Length: 553
Ligand code: ATP
Ligand code: MG
Image 1 (cartoon, rainbow, N blue to C red):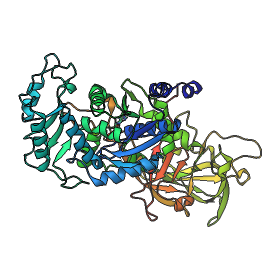
Image 2: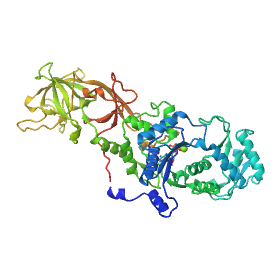
Image 3: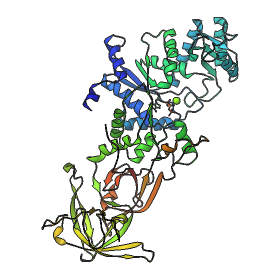
Image 4: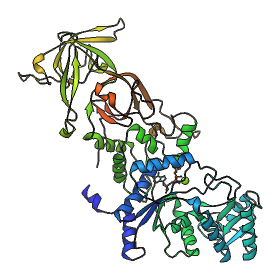
């Protein structure tokens, strides 16, 4: 681990070099989401990377909505994205921008290119443009409109802006090189006509800039130094560089690409998440089985655990998929010492202590977290009737079974030793009640004569128990069978959600608020569901179970 914190990633190396050579004297990064969906764990990586670099180099971090495409964008997403980034702890201070605020400057930039003879209005249809573009092995063909005069282009572009043309009738193209081996350089379209209402600029514009033209301008206007994006834009970098060069920005930004974060057994792409939401397969964008940031928060993940995860993943140029178990490892590590360890019974049967006085309730002291004394202690009510887990009792157990069965003594966690004396069952053999006797001398869970027991089980006292619903989750897709079926639909895991409606938890959980999290001893880490939990009907999401096969190398 120590080596990892010392050695720098490839982006830091680029920045160090730029600072040393005086290419830039400061570091200014940004996060530029398109407001067309909720953010997911992959975006978290990008946010924390960009924000982290700004912090590391004492620079600045901008938040910018890349809202140049009016078809798919919604204000609802703007608010959710802001909330998610704040929750992650990235601070844009007073630098919240919208690319649409630059439409005027982008228009001016396009005019400048026309004046330089570097852009032209083209009347070819979308299909023709595609045809003329050529292929990877064949050069493209020049558009018959390529050599229009500057004056004609200026007038036509102005008319495009004035609304004289229908969608698709004319476009503005950069004049670069139809024979370039890079297809993106074959006179790419930089402005199109689209008679659409924009979520911020309304009907002010009927022409909109294309991403490859707009993005470098946005970066340059904001004084971004290092424009970090994902690998699929690598082939677009020559165009990015062309745009900032032709527009003669004094300190052009630099694009750097890194590999996207992919996780096994979950769905990351916005497109797939959207589909699950729209088809009602999940309960909205924040369904705890998803890895949108809203879903991770609802499930009970913390910003710290996500930061740890992103750091462990590292930054690289090679695409790879990270095991979901690593994310689980991070949340366990984060919560282990921070959160109280309480008792909750998820699949209850009753245990009656026949020699315990009827109607009596005593309060036993228990540490909130055995590994962290600072969390203090609490008093847990104990009485003659308790709930225990059904799986903690067996009538006829196999040899290695260490829990309760007739004739054995076990420890009730934080309480007493009890000896199982019998049970009551239905005709079909289903156990209803287990009987036992307790040894008052073992209060606190240890025998004065030093005798040992093999098992320790948890419990909740019946009269003071809080009834609750617990929700257990599994991955939403089963990657081993393939994320997608042959017909392109998602290969869903039918067991991704299990609802346990009759759980009992300690009364101390009565005051728990949305997002509060705890360890339920032996059952995992849980958190209060922010949407469905009420005082009358508490609902807990299992964040993660306690055990893992995941090992940090
Ligand atoms: P998706 O592919 O999930 O639809 P996107 O790339 O369309 O995402 P944008 O809103 O355009 O989403 O992305 C904002 C920023 O987040 C971009 O800089 C993008 O490169 C980055 N980003 C998106 N997905 C990932 C990912 N899986 N890992 C790392 N960064 C990502
Ligand atoms: Mg996108």
